[in-house]
Image (tube, rainbow, N blue to C red; front, side):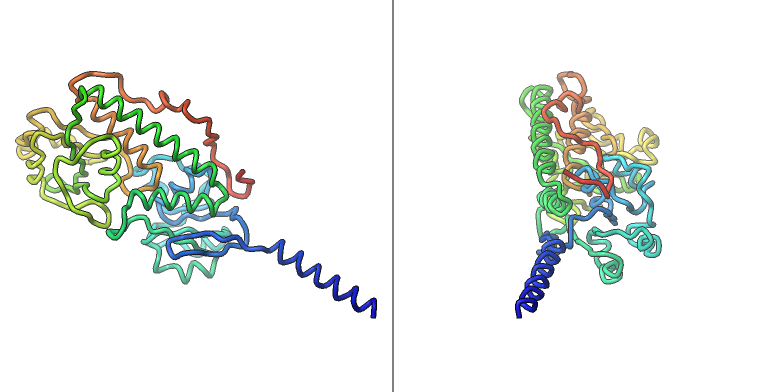
Length: 333
């Protein structure tokens, strides 16, 4: 009888120990609460904004799509050479992905229809940043925090967001000085062609960054999913006394000098126009900082009071963050 009791007790203890060692962790994505067996160490990020968020958390994904395109359009943060390319954002290479044995796959809206197939490879978390039904910039920040919890980087994320807030406040102070306390209205856009543009307005991270810098739009534009709307170039005449800024890259930039329509724009004649170095308009939380910095540098170049160009190194001392990426498979904290 005693032996039987001891056996049952031993089995119960082993069961409890096993359940503790395999205890799931609760995380959250755009669908709600999800369960993971453990903090992931081999992460595949299948969209650019997701890859950006993961890298900004100091975690190196094992794989992501279209790395060459990312390096041209997104640029920051840089993708280490150790990250493997697994095809495109809409058609990732499933065979290559499965061979990498990820313990977590993170997707965004463009991969949502692929979720059933991806779940055969590894657990999947889905984060939707861009939607006309919510504030995109706030969603990017919220998703950054949720990803940080899933990857065991919550304190890092909190400190990084605080650093971003201080940096953007510094940029705003510099702009207020350069524009003598009267900040101009600004509209930003990308060229689609020599005769059409994608104008950024309400619900764009570009307009959100400008608002943090104290700028109001020169042309009001309603909310859309991506915060951008395609328009004819001539619509920019409504910028009025405001400033027009266009994001690089634009392959036909050199041809603008010969464009009669472009040269006839009041803001071109009045030298209230400038280009903005490449910054990703559909990115994650920290892309807002990079965009604000790029916009600040562009605005300072054409400001009535000339100041030294904004430099991110001037305010890097506000935080002692260790921003060295951590290779997945190592301890995050």
